[in-house]
Length: 250
Image (cartoon, rainbow, N blue to C red; front, side, top):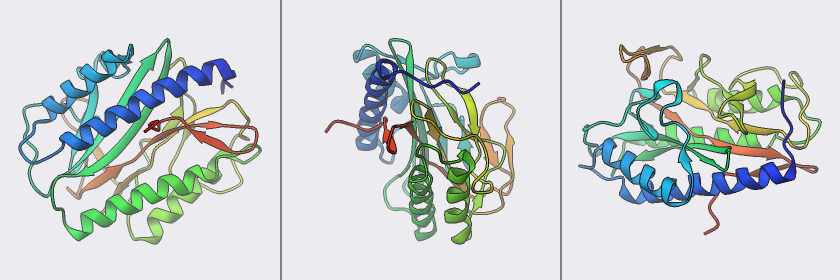
């Protein structure tokens, strides 16, 4: 069942989303060669808690950290650790915050120092595909029109869309219906209605689309070792379009 949120609920999600966005801003400034992903996790957790919120991911199905930190060929769900970032790496950071019972969720992929032209293009295309998808989020549109817009943007540039992991509804639960694939046929799927809140999150690979999970049962990596990117916003469907909730006020 897809749950439509009241304006009061969306107001709380707007605060949660702002906390997530501000956490991303802090981490973006901290990301540099030599910092560990564990240090980034601590910065995020400290800030989220300072805002009267709770890290959505911490303890979720046993996840041990406050952020997912996935480097280079790691797609999603990477554990923060003592791994030091190196010049030329890319790192996908997924952040969730729960504020007064409601969640915000956003992921971004960052360059560590100077990166290759191919990696830079990967980041640019993945981010662009997110906003192509968001542009289709409006009342009476069909859900998979969002999926198709993402897929077309990615594949037109010669990259691959991951099939096994998808976006999702979000609200009082971190993951709700509907699932939002990053591929699909336009004009199909559930019809969007005001009050629906969606976490739209393209996951894109330079090489083939296939992924596998490491022995830690969390970290997802590409099968061919090629690098990948992940971008995500939490988006509310409004009466006349959409509102991105995971944005900063400054």
